[in-house]
Length: 83
Image (tube, rainbow, N blue to C red; front, side, top):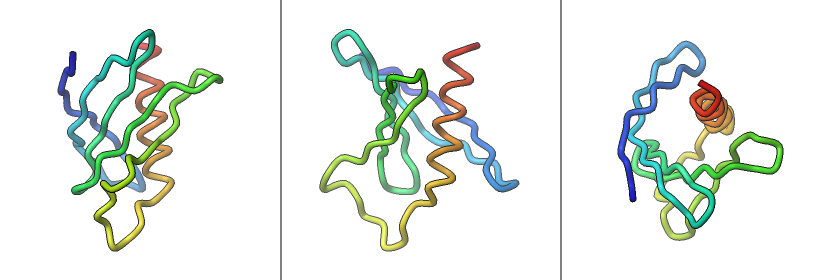
């Protein structure tokens, strides 16, 4: 079951409202987040955080995504998970 939601993230003083969806993967889950026109998938890691994955063939950016933004999204997902 995929559950769409809006993920509010603030990074470098800018507020983002990113489209996201929760995806069940067997006994775990992933969260797909749309940044511009590229979907990044975040999955839980062994330390209780989230790591960002990109699906091959989906990167359409001519400018790379800021790794700091991906970290800010991961931190937001951790805070939602702990709420």
